Amino acid sequence: MEATLIMTILLPILTALIYTGYYYHDRGVLQAAACEVAACADNLQDTKDLQNKLNQLAVSLTDSRSIAVSSLRRTVSLSDSRVEVTCSGTLSLPGLIAPLFGKSTLSIRETCRRDLTQPTDIIRKARGVEYVMDTLKKRKSTSGDQLVTQRGS
Image (tube, rainbow, N blue to C red; front, side):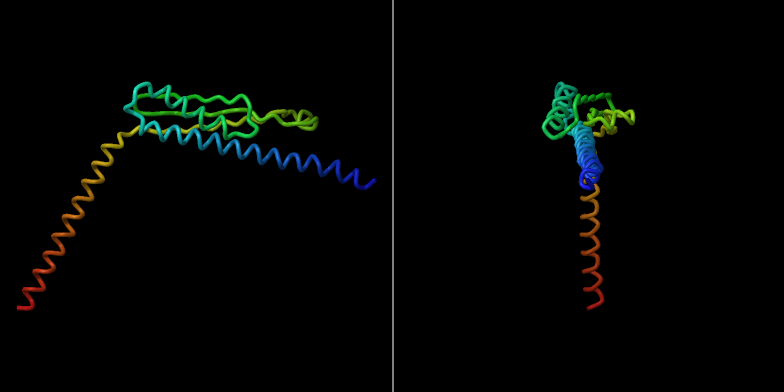
């Protein structure tokens, strides 16, 4: 008698915990996919048909990795200076208890926005700064050697 009462409370709690894990896993997958596609937009800027390549990348990153999300939607909007990637889907909740509370599905929507930059310009500037720093270090070390030789004589 007591076991039936405990099991009627315990099983819905265990099911809720499992589906909470599914929800957070799939939410993380969709967020990571959106961020990765947005980051790849910089590297693929000079390729032909960039919009199509980013859409294919979003599909490949979300299809095989999500566990319980259905009706996945991926949107990539691209302008000259900005990319916005949105991945969304719904997670259906099992049983009769969830509809009693008015929620039979949970929706997940993750968006990542990124300003597009030219990585070659940033790399050139970083290498220029590195060159200036190396030159200054060499001048400092050679001027330090001259001071030692002048004091020693």
